[in-house]
Image (cartoon, rainbow, N blue to C red; front, side, top):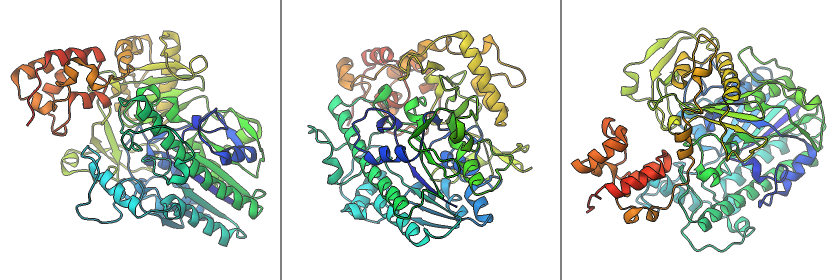
Length: 587
């Protein structure tokens, strides 16, 4: 028995032909659907990148307990468990987050592994004082990315191609062997959307604006032709991914592997390309474009080709499925289920699915309704990390963070170990977006939030039950305004109370020139505005947190308009501020 996992990053379900009409030319995804079972209701759980991969290892949610970080000492690891059972596991990837502080414990869990450099801002090739790249907050990453691209002048040298080459090499030399699992994990189509001309030429369109294949994590303010251009750049990269998928399918055909080799094709989350007025992910609510994922599975235990399954499934189900396939029992701490039951007769394996990001909305869906629970108050607190591996995405926890840590009692899943409890904050604030409730049957695009107290109460209780089943810390209940020791009641509902703010957060953000005086006051650095007594008083009356909070983390040049791109500020309020503020002269 053998298995292949082909994992993409930021692959949009709604842009693949097995799921929807699409501009994307990706015939191999249609070919895959004809050879496997297509999952209709597969959802993400913990997000984004490394939290999703932690779920693939552990089979349980992690976003309620800590932010982005490594596998913990108490975590079960599916690849490691397979290795201990005599299954050779091999990882090939160009995903740079594996080799940062926050991902450092994942790849050693495989028997063998290979890494290919150059994606995104991977600190790969060293060029001192390079030319080019803009001076926004991503300037350093963009500079490095330009350097990296210069070392990949052809498709053959692209890190995606080299990663798949390595996967094909493993199959070529091991196709006759037994008991192995190969994970081919591609960073693409994650931004930036870097492809060569062959794929760009597949999407001819008129555009003469600035280079734009790397949208920010913010609201859309670009003109429509620029938005469309970014979608075509993304589509070109998906077409390249489709070619890589075709190479895997060709190998399955060449070596007649369908009879005894499991094939799983998945992603961690999607990427907004202007939907809901947003780019990217993480800073906005987790709309369905981000969490309702493509998932294809061929399992020779059950068969099933050119078929579809509607049962609600999630990323946490991958570890139990892979373990059982090789005859290894999942651990008691795994919350996921073996998807063989879904493949056989579409049996339901859960009533509802939990998903979210640490410090953001905590969300639940039963397959029809989606409930997005925001923080109960603007402080979005208390928020805590529970960890024995104190690292962030690209750094260790700082001395100031660790000065006040306290030992926490063991959770049921920490194998009797006490963790470090560290008070923390989040770079996003769900309170600013409000609590949202959607009916996917009548509103699949999630364009019209609903207010229904009876329905909200049912979904809130479902959410609370899943949080308890996940051993959520009490602090998460407090942050969300949910009682910990009793069932939620009507007094705990938030949709109606937060509806006005939620509606304002969903408003599009007009271009800067659409505001009074062309938005000149909104374009002034906040820190400079606060130095002027009149401006400080105006800001204090409308946005008091800008005056009362110690803004040590605000970049020197951050303006109100830039802030509004990532943290919703009502358009009416921005218009009023543009009229009342006296712009601070710039040098």
